[in-house]
Length: 470
Ligand code: NDP
Image 1 (cartoon, rainbow, N blue to C red):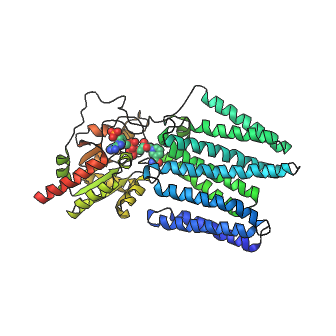
Image 2: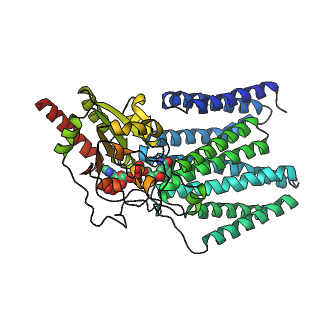
């Protein structure tokens, strides 16, 4: 049992974590939520050190402090330098390290007991082995996810015949080793094999998943890491680790479900479906007979300058082009002339949840102008111009009308219901789902080809010129 003051300290920490997560729910309060959770973590560290006051604090500090300093420097510099498009891999790396730490603590505990000549009893063995298993799996899986997103290894789904049988067989072997370890309570070599098997399983689990599905997998691995941390909390008898691990586990699971639902794909399809070409190639069924209409910057500037209401639909291509500041400038230009401008945000536009919100917030787009899909969809018919910038799948009407389409049933932004549609992208190539988009051939649609950032900047200048001349 802990000293009541220690327990109270942990309780305060747990409440701060919960408040922090609650505040992360809205962009308006997210910064504060982060600060509250970080302060909670600082309190947790201090309380844990106070709790250890009976032990040899000097040697603990000699070990822990350099690690903390190195970690703070690498984490701080990395977080400051990372580009918005690099955020998913950064999260994967952080997540993997958390999982690895949970696993290492449990391996250390197992060794500690067996080195003292004792066997690990069942009550201790179960959480220790669970933490080793889930921590190792999540560590290796997160590193593969990082490597895919960083394009250190091919991002396409890597599959081979009999993959599921191999993975299932390996899982059975790892579980069998775990049962033997629980029953005997010792065996460092078997523990090493158990951990190696779990690491391999983590790698094999993530390799067949396509690069653009990685955020869903990272969120799932994040929930695994939470569970590993919570179980490690039982190993260490540390309440705050149990609570924070459970919070991470639960929030990761909820986020995974929300993303799968927003793509209308069961999680099993994300995990085992090897879905998505990753985009970038012409569609296999690219339309014979149908012609997309190309427009010039001048044409589109006139259309925008004389519109009453424009809805901007950002997508992955805007993030790649880093065109968010140019978009804000164009919107400012239009608003100064009395055009109503709003942004339509699809829940899975881009390559991670909230991608577009963060991107536009970086360019200081006022938060009330960002409208979620359900809120803005009814307003498309009264929209003069839907300006689709680097988005593709999230405005594909096949999701509503073509039961044969792989994205059939995925909720989309109804850009096709606007009075006119302008699509900014570089070519007729597909998006992540690798399928053709009938919106591009709609008689109301014009295509403006080019890099999103450059095209939007040219549009701003042209709108200014058109309006000055008017
Ligand atoms: P898409 O991947 O469907 O389309 C992006 C488009 O951007 C491409 O067609 C590409 O066309 C264009 N593009 C790329 N670079 C540039 C550039 N520099 N300038 C202009 N255009 C560019 O993106 P969406 O945002 O519409 O859809 C997201 C997809 O990702 C969905 O299928 C979703 O399910 C999936 N996904 C999302 C997750 C999330 O959490 N947000 C998680 C997992 C998957 P071109 O090459 O011709 O320029």
